[in-house]
Length: 462
Image (tube, rainbow, N blue to C red; front, top):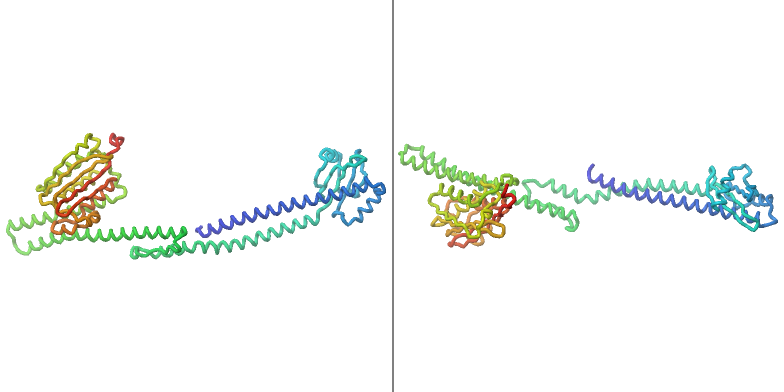
């Protein structure tokens, strides 16, 4: 069942319940009021008759019967009986004995002073009448034909009104819910028209005040993020393809040129060395792209384990120097590192090593002396790695863009690179709940500080 039908059903059910409750209450109070009014009329009529018989000497039972027979105030099928203290009938208009009274009922009336009961279709009232001559029991009964007929008419009217009201409410609910859900249907229609090819489109936010407008605004914000992610993905794929295609093109070109004519052993050696350099560059790009993809995974934490940051740093230095023997990397421990626990972090060894190697490689590559100084520090529940070089530096306005994949500074054109290193390091550090800060000045060098949370002592014992 769709939301529209559910809302209509809920709306009709609630209103029907309210109508039914109101109708039952009206009928119940009307029936109670009719009964009270009828018994009051019985009591008044019976008291008048009893006074005439018992207090007026000139009125005999025969005279009273004639009076009662022609009395226009008599109730329909009214029957009256008066008993003395010996339970003898002093007066009775019930010739056919429609209302049968036994001694138990008479004693009950004397005990309770007033008793209401029914006898067949008769509604009866028994009460104790007292005058100067003694105590008498008066039993009066009648059929409230008109009252019951009015009650039946009221019941019929309420049922008809209830049925008609349900039909009207059903139609009104259908129209009202349709109107209320129209903005949602409009949003659904607009969303259905949005695909990967037109993510620039946005949903109409309406008046901008109600919940549906807020929903549309939230959806538009989500579309903006998706659009940005798609654009970044397209740019990433284009740049990655470019970075991979260039070495492949260079490799293929050198092979084709070397095959055009016979070469000397030295020339072939030079070609092979050039090919090795291009393949190494291609391997580096591929490895960084794989690390970048791995660092962007949502479940990257599944490979986390307790690690020593100083050991990671030394291993990264050894690996980088093996690839670039001309690099110089100095490592120093700050006096704040006074305990091994300050060197322990929780993370992925391969990813963190990749981040450190990329930062070291950038610092050495862009420095004339190819020298990077690294200092390990601790404070505030974090371990800090500080990388300092004397390289070409970075313009202040370009620093926020350095974490975008394939972005390179304007002064880095003469250096080989692909703009993945710092982006990769940023994503890896961020996935480890850390922070990377760049402070640089053109022609004076760069300082990169990496903050990583120290491993919880409980985890360090695992």
